[in-house]
Length: 113
Image (cartoon, rainbow, N blue to C red; front, side, top):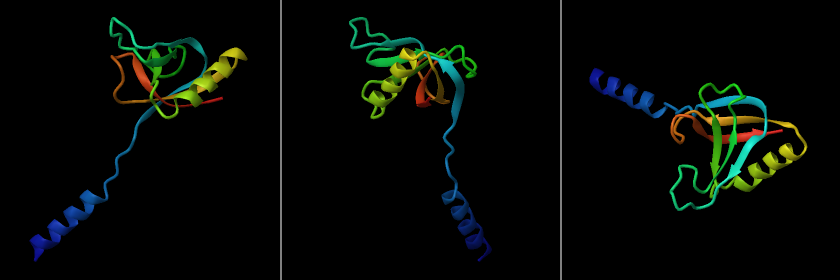
C-alpha cells in the first residue's frame, strides 16, 4: 500500500510539472543593421531570415536578433521594425534564450514600440 501511495504521488508530481519558456530582454534599442536575406547560393546561416543588430541592448552575448521569413509573425514584426527605423524610434526586443544560430544570434520572441 505504501509503495502504491508513493508511486501515485510521484505520478502526480511528474504530471504537474510545467516547462518554463526562457527569454532574454534586450531592452529599448534603435533599429540598426536591419537585413533581409532571401535564398542564397552560398547557403548562409542567415538565408531566408530577417535580422537586426541588438548588440547595443542588454542581452549579453547576443549580437543579432532574427526571424525566419516563414514565421507567422514575420510581416507584423517587420512592419514594426521598419516603422521604428523610419521614425528613428527605439523598439523593445525580446529573444528566445535557447537555440539560435551560432553563439551570437537568437530568435525574436516579440518586439514592441
